[in-house]
Length: 238
Image (cartoon, rainbow, N blue to C red; front, top):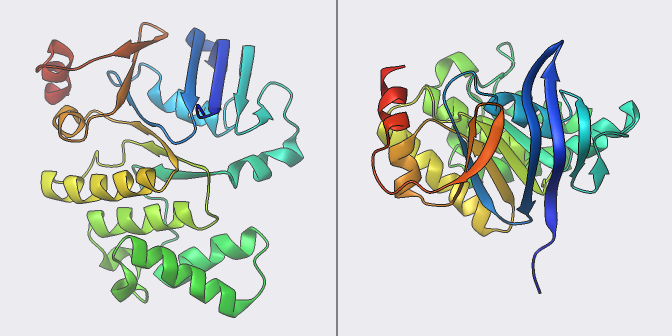
């Protein structure tokens, strides 16, 4: 039996204020897929991620994410949609005045977890998945960039989402740390979760191959990377 689509876009236009970022976008992503979004800076990868997360509105077309209609979604429904997805940001967005335990517990309490014992168990469980239980009492500024991103991945997993949206998650990290994080993302995917990742990291794409969508000229295209492309060379200069 074929997997159901967790993301369906039909003739979608995405705009920020009055500026059209992407237009006439149609794509399907099946539940359990791993998909890369590639493209130069400013082409709209982050805008597409924000649209999937209901941060940016769909101004034209049809869009369904995890069973929610993004065109007709009500404000009160957005938190319920977001519990079905975990978002991993390049800039971490950890609360600087709280340690790792408190950063994760804060998210659980904000999503209606009440029992302190359950919260502690879940925090330890997700930190174990990313190899960070030994840093549970550390403050964000005491962690390396790679360690902070591991905590961010753990945070994204807290409510057992159906999909992970990752926006340049290895963009500020060294190659070895990036490989370690990609292995975590692949493990998450192998456990059945959909992963959509915006990235510039072409060597990483070849090391961990998956479906590729290129964002370019306000469009989204299916792509295969079999050699070092001119776009890759350009990205290395950016």
